[in-house]
Structure formats: C-alpha cells, structure tokens
Amino acid sequence: MLTRRLRRLQRAAARLSRGSFDDPIVDTGNDEIADLAGSLDTMRIRLGQLENARRTFIANASHELRTPLTALGGILLLASEYDHDPDAREEFLRTMREQVDRLGKLATDLLDLSRLDAGGVAVEREVIDLTAIAEDCAREVLPFAQRRGSEVLTVVGHDDVAAVGDDARVRQILRALLDNALK
Image (tube, rainbow, N blue to C red; front, side, top):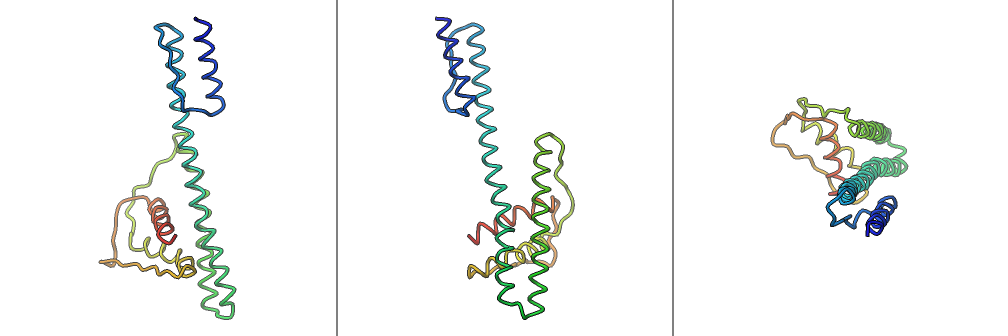
C-alpha cells in the first residue's frame, strides 16, 4: 500500500516535470506521504499560475512589439508613395523616429518587467498631460489607420487634462486600445 502511494506521487511529479498542471495531486492518508502530496499539489497550482502568467506575458509582449512594427511598415509604404513631397517625407521620418523610440521603450519595459519579477521596479507617480498623450498616440497610429481606411480623432473638452500617473504606462495602455480599435 505504501509503495503504491509513493508511485502515485512519483507519477504526479513526472507529470509536473512535463508541464502538466491540470490533475490534482491527492493522497487520502494521514501521514507524511499525505503531507508530501499536499505540498506537491500546492506546487502544481503555483506552477500552473506561473505558466499562465508566462503565456500571457509572451502574448502581450508580441502584441506590443507588433504595433510599432506595423506602424513602421505602413509609414514606409506611404513614404514610397509620397517620395517627392518634402513635407510628407519629413512627417514620415518624424513618425518613424517616434516608432523606433517606442520600440526602444518597449525593450526597456521588458527589462523593467524582469526587474519587477525580481522585486526592483516602481511605477512612476507624476502629473501627466492626458491631452498630449492622446494626441501623440493618435498621431502614431494615423498611418496604420489611413491604410485601413479609418479615421483617428482626438476630441478633448478642455485644452489640458492632467492626471497623476505613469506616462509610459498610460501611453502603453492607450496604444493597445487604439491598436485593438483599429483592428
């Protein structure tokens, strides 16, 4: 009986090592083996949560990286169509620089996330201009919107709308919302 219980735990540990976190690990005994089964089940739950967080992170990072890359592709396409207009060329170059900066910020954000995971990053709390952020983000997605035949409008009831928050995080959220809306 004891050997059977230990083999069940051994098979459960093997499932965990293969990344299978669905089946609960249960032992109905009232001894050290049952305690070990409980500890393995707690580990199973935590590993499952970590795996879900990892998948979500990869999906979000892919989404965040795809947006500026798509914008750069759209800008390059438009730039090739307007190559004789110096004003349009300058606007395209400015927008491309912004998107390259955005990719750099995303790389920094990925580093921040790894630091956050290690317990070393704080979210900024500063007065931010929501109007400027909205206008900047709308301008960033404009080439992508135009390619899709969509319009991006920034409508603000006041000239300046301020809030306390983290500028980079607010921009990240707004970009994701705009990207999703355009898709």
